[in-house]
Image 1 (cartoon, rainbow, N blue to C red):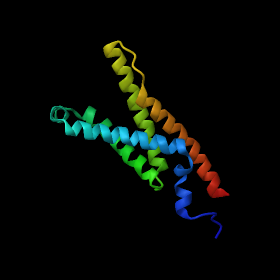
Image 2: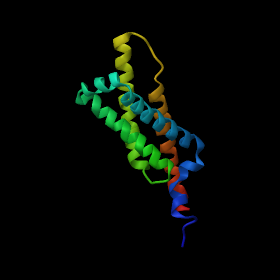
Image 3: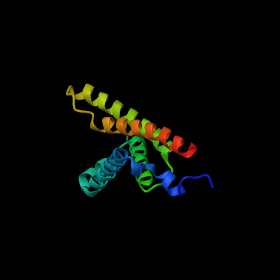
Image 4: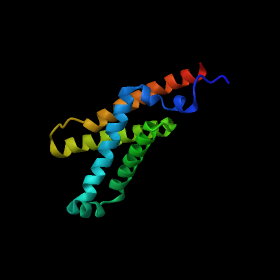
Length: 136
């Protein structure tokens, strides 16, 4: 046995990185909380049914990211798919932010793209640390 710990310990390095754990929890809570809020209000529920595929596809990607955030928090090895989805969500958030600025003329703070950029950075950084830990 050359492994320095149990497989569970090697896979759940997010528990050793408090910033990564906090980002995972906040992004999952915001995405899932937004859906719960939208489904709880009848007028928002009716509005959702009138949306096109251009609205539903980013929403499905954001929900998948929230589910993968939760699975990484409980210790499953999903860094690769979560890295890809976070990049997609960051791109979608940036496009929605720029479109919102051009339509309204206001410059709101891009809260979600900043959170996703931080998550992408921490996932990328922890990917190298996990590989170094397995090699040691």
